[in-house]
Image (tube, rainbow over the protein chains, first blue to last red):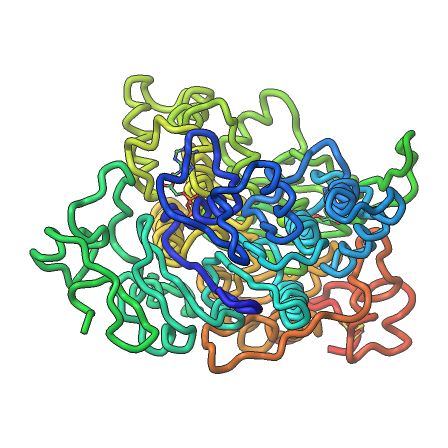
Length: 290
Length: 323
Ligand SMILES: Nc1ncnc2c1ncn2[C@@H]1O[C@H](COP(=O)(O)OP(=O)(O)OP(=O)(O)O)[C@@H](O)[C@H]1O
Ligand SMILES: Nc1ncnc2c1ncn2[C@@H]1O[C@H](COP(=O)(O)OP(=O)(O)OP(=O)(O)O)[C@@H](O)[C@H]1O
Ligand code: SF4
Ligand SMILES: [Mg+2]
Ligand SMILES: [Mg+2]
């Protein structure tokens, strides 16, 4: 990713988006480990750094907005204290200054009455307010990379637009890169430069946002675009029949083959490689390649 | 001719929370989370509740299932009050399900998914014990979970998989009414379509009623029969789906519907950080609560009681002096 760039990651529920982000942050849950690969931030391999060195980067140079705010917040600490702690740790500010920075950060993410709400415990906030608190915590130290995992699912569209505007401002000012994991194709269309589509643990398509919306190639992506509700009240929504294969029992060929309308014997036998049928537009599919 | 009573009737529901401060947690103010909400919901109907984040939607739902104590007001299911405790509450729980907004925190982390889904059947003695395992498996299949996932614990699931566990649990007892608080917010649009189709099937076959809370206006426009728009603890407009989306009439409804992003990267808006304060339920403005942001506001809007939610000629309910 380039500085200032916005990359959206979309894909089926359970396809590995959150695990990807957690791996980059070195925050994989117990029992999960990075089996191979590298992650470089400004030239340094994050996967090879010591735990201490990663802790210094996390929350200052690279920050994450977690998918489920309630699990990311400490239930017995006020949200203001949690943000102030993040400020104090990375910027060495005193208690008062850190608290003031926390209140200011809450105000910027459109928390109502931020000075008072900083003293609230997570359970005293609405779902969208908790989400804003987690966003404030990620933004407060002005990181170079933000991994935002479904950051606006609990926000109404007006506040969502304001938060996206806030992040866009930070990107323009500091060159912050944004990885945006989202199911909301409206948000993707509005802010992404580039989009990665994942299916069953792999990238199946990648393109600039306009290219992807104008001409999605992978059958999964096309199914996804066709399933967006467009307000025809009561009509049945198109879905993609079937479910994702169990990660432990992936088929030999293309993981999408069991659900794919175009699948052939070759699809079931061998995994399609990523190819570029158009410049800058990658797809992993035997039937839609060049 | 007398109409049959609605399935659910909510009248003047009020929920206030204390604001506390300091070591002694002294009470220094009041959050007016829900401030006089009334609506009815018929059998087989879907009423959507939309509005600004923090306007009191979840609190309304939690009050209906008895998880938050209302400050005032009443709610009746089939004419009987839902503000009951003990055994009557249990009978009620069988008729009213809820899908919580935060899937993870609503699932016991030490229970396997199959135990979580089986518990309601055991508690309410539904079916023969030997058949309950099969019932759980059928439920999982309907929400798109694989049979092998029944042995897993909640933390081994993705966000959207947990959300589907919550939906399966709420549907397990085949209630009359389900409160769905952002039920599909963590799902990709294809799984979302499966779930919305499932909810529509159950509604058609068994007459389920849904109170659907959602920020996704595309989903709301697709599933709702009627829509209630809330702002700072009150319903400001209640209208049929087609009427509302064709022409919202409350100035807040207009603002909200105009802010939805379009799935078209060629028609982007210019996003900018916002100016000014956000409306706070701890300091609700006098008069119409929306007046500080309203382009139509006059002196009349700034003082006195808020405009009442009153019926208009076109059949919708509206709380605005100038519309
Ligand atoms: N702790 C764990 N142990 C075992 N499997 C896990 C664990 N956490 C996640 N998984 C599995 O890994 C896969 C990827 O999960 P992940 O959370 O990355 O999905 P996701 O793409 O973020 O989905 P969603 O859109 O639903 O949030 C899922 O199949 C999930 O069940
Ligand atoms: N237990 C509580 N203690 C104090 N205040 C609370 C409590 N629960 C909710 N509130 C407050 O009540 C108001 C309404 O919250 P609610 O969760 O109902 O909003 P919501 O409409 O569901 O918002 P969202 O769309 O963000 O989920 C908020 O100001 C919230 O901070
Ligand atoms: S009552 Fe007045 S302030 Fe409120 S929405 Fe109507 S015009 Fe605007
Ligand atoms: Mg996820
Ligand atoms: Mg809520």
